[in-house]
Length: 100
Image 1 (tube, rainbow, N blue to C red):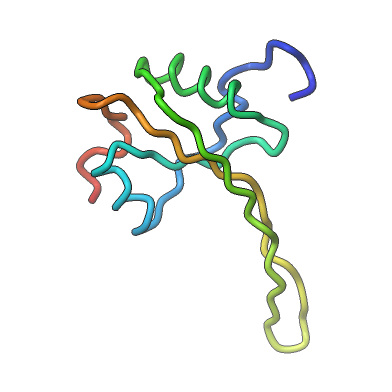
Image 2 (image 1 turned 45 degrees about the vertical axis):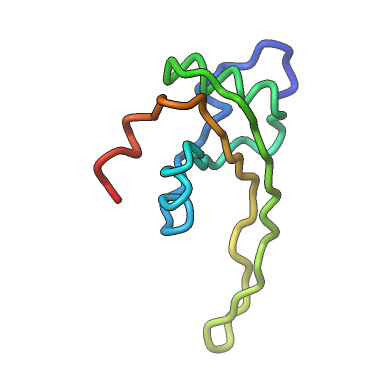
C-alpha cells in the first residue's frame, strides 16, 4: 500500500460475514476487511470502482488481535482492519443480497 496508485483489488480483502454486518445492510452500510495500510480515500475509490456505486461515508475500525488458548497451547487470533462503507440511498452491493 506504499505506492500512490495501488491495485484497487488489493485494498479490499474480503466482506465481513456476521450477523451484525448483515443487520447494517438494511441501513445501506457494508463491512469489508481491508489492507492494514489502506486509508479512507483508497477504500472509497476501491468500492466505487469495483462495485460501481457512490460512497457517502467510510468508517475504519482497527480490530486488535485476541489471545487464545487451547489446553497448553497459547496463541493469538489475528487482528486487522475493517471498513464500514455507507452507500448512497437506493444503491446496494449484490454480493450481500439474498443472504440475510
